[in-house]
Amino acid sequence: MQTVPRVLIVKTSSMGDVVHALPMVSDIARAHPGATIDWVVEEGFAAIPRLHPAVARVIPVAVRRWRKRLAAPGTWREWRATKGALRAQRYDRIVDCQGLIKSAWLARCARGPVAGPDAASAREPLAACFYGERIGVPQALHAIERNRRIGAAAFGYTPDGPPRFGLKPAAIDGELRALADERPYAALLTNASRATKLWPDERWAAVEAWLAQRGLRSLLFWGSDEEGVRTCARAAGMRDAEVAPRAPLDAIAAVLAGARVVVGLDTGLAHLAAAVGAPTVGIYCDYDPALVGITGDAPCESLGGVDRAPSAAEVIAAIERVLAASPVR
Image (tube, rainbow, N blue to C red; front, side, top):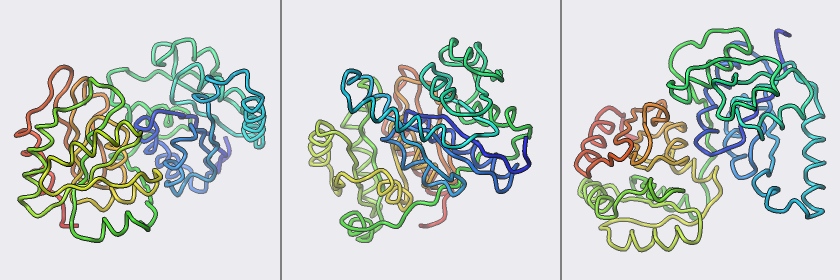
């Protein structure tokens, strides 16, 4: 491999998975200064790799949307354009760290040797058939460490030190800037893609009341219209809370970066908050945080687990700890 390689990373979704692959990019950039690193990602998450200064080009794909409209002429026009972008450069190494058949298929559409997890390590074992180099990584490792080991094996270096995300959030502007500049704030991420991830509203109210007593107003975020309705109802019962307007992902990342503390469910935004350097407390209700716990440069804690939602008192105690360990922002 060239000393300064051209690299393609394939990690398309979901948001948290994309965030977990960022330290691998930082590792590659340190091991191979000047490397050109491109990234294939679902269109809805393209803003995340663009925040990393080592990522030269982001190639958005729309596999989720294409699958719903396979017969539409526009779908095939978009795919041909995407395939052209994938094949525009020859890569010294293509790394699929997602381990799905769809991600392996995208990796093989690009030009260059492909590396990815072996059948015992991939989320879909058949994906390993697409890789020229198959890399074994233990399933019990945290997702960040799994990605780092795949990158290290593909490029021949040893991961050094804790994971570094290296994101550079954009400046806040518009209505979000007015919200962020008003006075110190916490961010509460109360929505999730699965009902089993949700935390009771009365516990959110208890956490918000504790924050309000300490002079922190809470900003609540939402994605879909349905989430917006629920979030407004949730905020109406709180002491000093405001629902943020719908905004692009990079703008939300900038607001999260400025929060005194972020408290969130096991969702992509909570992982993004930690990645941009916010002190973060993660609430887990249906998954093991040992595998995908909140990790970032600032103090972070993950509470709960499978069928073990934490109490409001436990979350408040964790907020106290991460605030005590963090410099005043």
